[in-house]
Length: 210
Image (cartoon, rainbow, N blue to C red; front, side, top):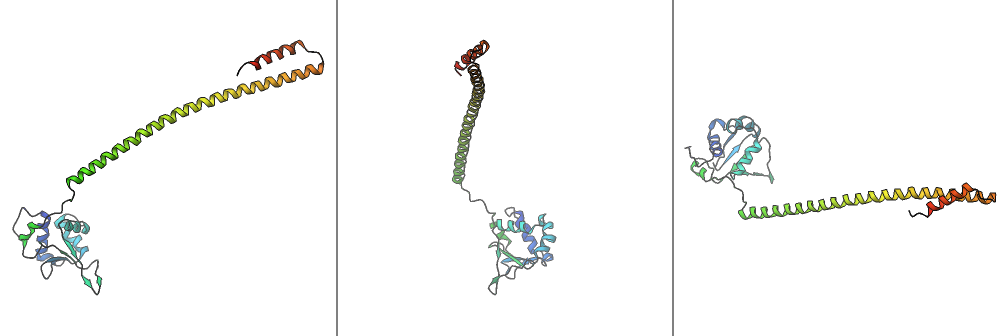
């Protein structure tokens, strides 16, 4: 095979490998010369791939073939597709044929089908998503601020309620004291000067607004 700078290194190595008679035990041309066969995937991955492609991953090798448009040839035998793990696997490409290395430059690596307008649409979608996220974030901040204000108001109300409860309890104690002293006066039949003073003081306190 003559060196051609238009042919990717992967295809050059593949062609050399299939052409090499020393590797025919593991990889070779089909009888018609329109495809090539990998006769033992496990041995091929272990013994051949590291020498030519610096890895031993058969799946990676097949992915590269697919990227250049190669297709696996499925053989039908008695109505079923043969899928023997260690059996021959055949790959075919219209421009990969025995004795026609000049066709190799026609084999092109697949490129992404993404069009510029698709990128524009994706960019617009991303912009909308970012704007939506920012809006949600802003709303969340407003909610957090409102919740903090409500929490402060709630704490103030609870403090006020606690203060009112204390005052109410104190008033209840004074009322009980006044009632007790009144009962004592009524029972004795004659008011005591000290009791009268306490009664006036208690009455004055109870008359004060809470």
